[in-house]
Amino acid sequence: MASRSRHSAYDKTALVAGGAGFLGSFLCERLIDEGFRVVCLDNFRTGSADNLVDLRRSPRFSLITADVCAPLPKKLRADRVYNLACPASPRHYQADPVHTLMTSVMGARNLLELAAASGGRMLQASTSEVYGDPDQHPQTEKYWGNVNPIGIRACYDEGKRAAETLCFDYLRGRCVDARVARIFNTYGPRMRPDDGRIVSNLIIQALSRRPLTIYGSGNQTRSFCFVTDLVDGLIRLMEVDPNPATPVNLGNPEEYSINELAVIVGDMIGSASPIVYQPLPSDDPQMRRPDIALAGKLLGWSPTTSVRQGIARTIEWFASALDADADDVGALAASSSGLTLPAATVAQEAD
Ligand code: NAD
Ligand code: UDP
Image (cartoon, rainbow, N blue to C red):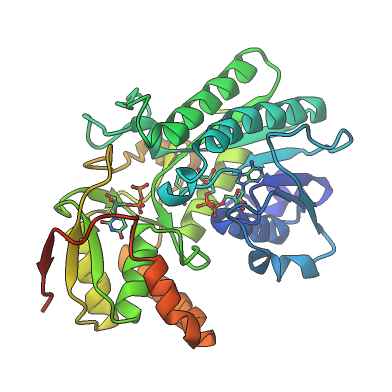
């Protein structure tokens, strides 16, 4: 991994936009450990002050509450700009789709300008969503994707695609040393209980002995990466020389159907929760698995946490979060029970 001596972090400032979020807070902690001064900029739409409790004890950490769509503080400078500002869960990015699109486009532009004024580097947190519902499997960085530009996921997918475009235009114009990480489904402690995502939903539902919700047939697949592995990949991509000048996939290529994941989580928790099948939201991709050969070659990176290890650590975290506020278990389980969808279409008892 990038060590203090390799990139002399001690005299450098890293700005993490979206640093109060799930991935961002882990990234801020890791950057502080690496010796950076860290400035977190966040509007707290989906982020939380709880994620920053330990960070705020460090004299090398500071917080700016601001929206990346608005002009950024004029004197702000950073050697490293990480742009993670954007809600990641479908439930949250679809809640205010116009703001989501603007966050990706205006946010990337404002942060690229800041990086240009600073003579610094910028890393854009892009997503496997740029591949849409892919007709190439696994997905390599050369694949251009299959995105519905007017669907309910478009505010996120097209926003992220436009942000990638901006990064490569700034790079070609020699204005900014910009890098793009295409992040696949990442999970771990500090996911919001009301995120509505598959890993957090299944864990909360199984812990609270509620039915496990599966949308569609459950045969759709995803690949799940543990948060600390992902953060390691982000920092490697930011620090590698020369600039790879290509997006780089970061994710865990272990691929599971949603049905398989429900069985794994149910078994690990020892839960007899039944599975309820609900309608599949529109444009929900049928399969996702990153080809990470490029990350291996350019960054020497691959995930080291297996899905079972990572899920175990995530279960432990949610279990203690639920224990800490036992009265909220019902509310959390209810908030994890899915989108506002009609009643279950099929119900099936788990063994
Ligand atoms: P998150 O919702 O926990 O974090 C996003 C953070 O950005 C939050 O703290 C939120 O308050 C902040 N934010 C949102 N809009 C903002 C704005 N306009 N101005 C300032 N701050 C704003 O999500 P996450 O899972 O931590 O994802 C972080 C980044 O990684 C996102 O850009 C997301 O698109 C990307 N990503 C995440 C995943 C994943 O599986 N978690 C997958 C692919 C890409
Ligand atoms: N999903 C599900 N039940 C849930 C939440 C999600 O079956 O309670 C499905 C969802 O429809 C998708 C997959 O799980 O097919 C992954 O969803 P998630 O929201 O985690 O991420 P994304 O679709 O953005 O990869």
